[in-house]
Structure formats: structure tokens, C-alpha cells
Image (cartoon, rainbow, N blue to C red; front, top):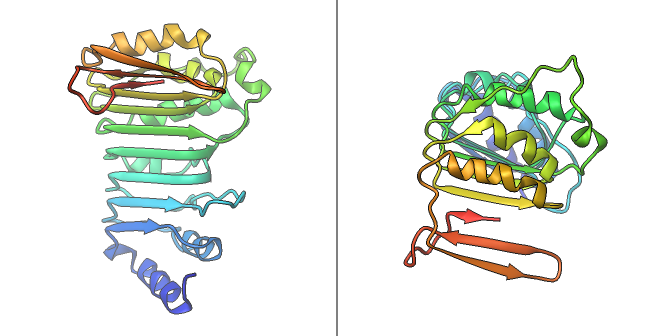
Length: 244
């Protein structure tokens, strides 16, 4: 448990936002609520932000809309965070190198949400690692046809992206993969909560759009509830370049 003295110290540090360069918050829920509420301001020199909700809690949190980090390079929101797509952070933090949104709750309007996300993503030309794990279950919005009033999905090129990780439904991946080109991609890691066959063309597109995803060996594992594939660039490689 976090003591009152420690909690007071963190809150005091957050008041001096112009001095905070790195922030890693993985604390009890009661304290975390207070810290997030105190973050509704600009942190001019903040470079690293990691916020994790303790496991076992089904509470959904969201960063204040007034939170800004213009020099933020690494952002990770872990476990049950509302996707802050309208937050100024995605407009001002154009220097992001790492973006990890783990177990993020998305807005029910899936198509419109992804369109806005791609617009924000197009501003992140320095992005090298992108990880998206969607927590909410598949809804009818994932499979419905695109309404005529919703803008067509834009195409985004991420010139420095090297690692792309995804976990969620195949319907969501079908919306993202065709819209993203990453010429320097060296690792693709995807976990699907449902069927894979309809995604094969999109995966092939993602692999063929970069000259770095090459494989010389692959392993296929058959388990009771899932199948996994790991492919390696050469026989001596210890880290896989493709994981499904």
C-alpha cells in the first residue's frame, strides 16, 4: 500500500509540472485517481509517461482533456483506459517514439473512431513502436457498413515505424492494416480474438509493403483453444519477426 507521505510527495511533484521529466504511475486505484486528476495541465519537459491501472479492477480511467506533453516521447496507458482520441496530447505530442495503448476502451462508433485515430497517427512521423490492445468486445459497429456521412479512411505512412503490435478482433484489424504503410517495419506481432482467414490478404499486404520482413524459418503451434505462428528472419535469430 502507498503511504500518505508518499502520496503527498507525488501530488507535490505534480504541482511542479515544469520540473517533471519522467512519470511512471503504477499505484493503488485510490491514489491513481488523485494523481490523474492532478495531471490536467501542461508538462513542458515531460518525455516519458507510463500509467497502469492495478490488475483486478474493472474501473475505466481517462487522462484529463487539459493534459499536455509537447515533448513527450514515450506514452503507455495500461489496463482499462478510455481512448483519449480528443485529447490535445495527440496533437501536441508529435515527437512520440513509443505509443502503447494496452486494454484501451474504444468509443462505440468504431469507424469514426479509427478515422480520427489515423488522423492523429499521421502527425507522429517519429513513431517507432506502436502497440494497440483493444479491451472492449466486438459490437455490431465493427461489422456494419460504413455510413455515407462518415469520411473515408485516410492512408497513413509511418516512415520510422519498426514494431507494430495488435490484439483485438479481426474486424478492427481489417480497418487498420490497409490504412498503414511502414516501410521500415521489422516486427509484426498480432493476436486475434476471433477468426483469422479474412485477414490473410491484409497481413500479406503489411508484409509485402516493407522490405525488412523476411523469414527463413517458422514454427506453428496447435493448442486446445488457439494456433500460433512465429517466423524468424534467419536460423540464428532468437527473436521472431512475425508472431500471429
